[in-house]
Image 1 (cartoon, one colour):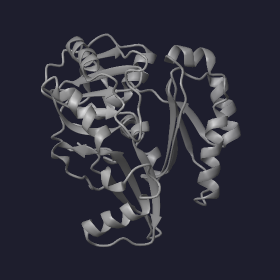
Image 2 (cartoon, rainbow, N blue to C red):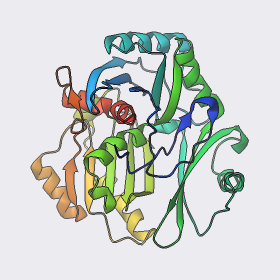
Image 3 (cartoon, rainbow, N blue to C red):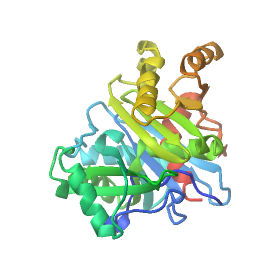
Image 4 (tube, helix red, strand yellow):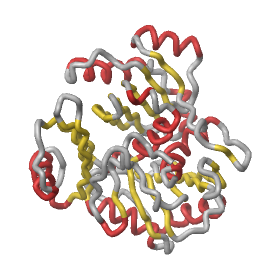
Length: 339
């Protein structure tokens, strides 16, 4: 089965090996079919039936008390490993996920993502790493030697390389692993929320990502955007804010989505010299009406659609609500990456 068009942008595999795989190898088949996500408010898990490539055999979402998980670039953000471990264990049981190995999605706010446009790169892997560390050392709020660095090279038709780098403090990464180790569970692979959710979009809309697409995700604590041009990620933006729950977000967040879309498109056009995107997918806790989508399409001069996180999968259990689909999207994307 053909794997995702993106790649394992932020991947950290077992054994702490750095990952530099090509863009068409976002997930490797040896990844476990059980994936979970830790966010500020929720722990979610999705279990894929190995006999059906798109079958969801079990899922569950557990609440995380406010303040227990506080994503940070510079220090571990879990307030109590024991308390979070209890939530994880109970949620795994409800999902029927009896396992000693999982894949994990962590908050975007734990890592620094950057995209570099380079004319050329050294041929040796070690020299590439040192060059990127040199470029990054003034942009991260800690010693670059204390970071786990992953990067992906994306050659373009112009000959330039769009290199995506992801840096995360080793102590931040180690604490997430420690939570699962306390339960006797090995974390086989770690990635960021936005890239895991994008896996679902890439599977559903492969033709569109060969052109130009803006993928925007809003949650109760953040908003993240990717622009993909000819299968290469050329833009990433992440902003934190805080509502206590997705329901509060839907009730209280009255901002026009265009206020978030517009600066992304302006950067894409002004800094990257692009004409604009052809398609926009919105992954929000609520679906926008046809009238709202039409208005956005007119202002952005692009086709605008709600992103349906359930469109790729088949549910063995009763299909969950749209809100649960939204919360499960990263775990589903990572779990489906097994196949």
